Image 1 (cartoon, rainbow, N blue to C red):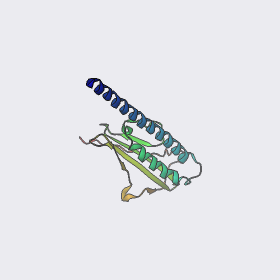
Image 2: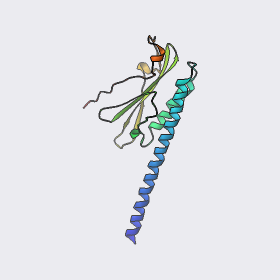
Image 3: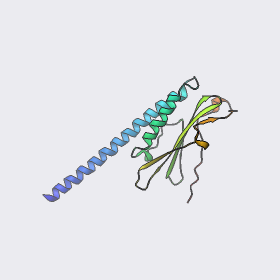
Image 4: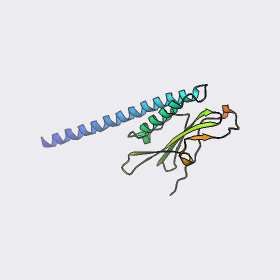
Length: 158
């Protein structure tokens, strides 16, 4: 009887762990869908500078989503309007994006994600030099050729 009780208890714990993993996965997929809709709204509006609140909401939702268990292993494939890099050793991810307020002013945001020694996701906010999120520079190219991405290269130190 004691052996049966232990077996049932182990099965119950295994089922609970799977249910929790499935719930986390559904939460990540839900957040990805919400982020996709927010990026679409922010980037597809014809009127520049009208979505500062959306920019801030993206920041908040993305930060929370990257802290979810299992988020490090998620591909984030629906977020095709942002920069997304993974280091050669698969230990670090960088997500970044810019929002054009007007022709000469951009809002910038991004995150670095990695796993701590316990396997929990750690998220660090990227900042421009000086801690600013604002970036101003003359843009010489045609606006139709600007893809709203910030490009990085991750150098892996061994």
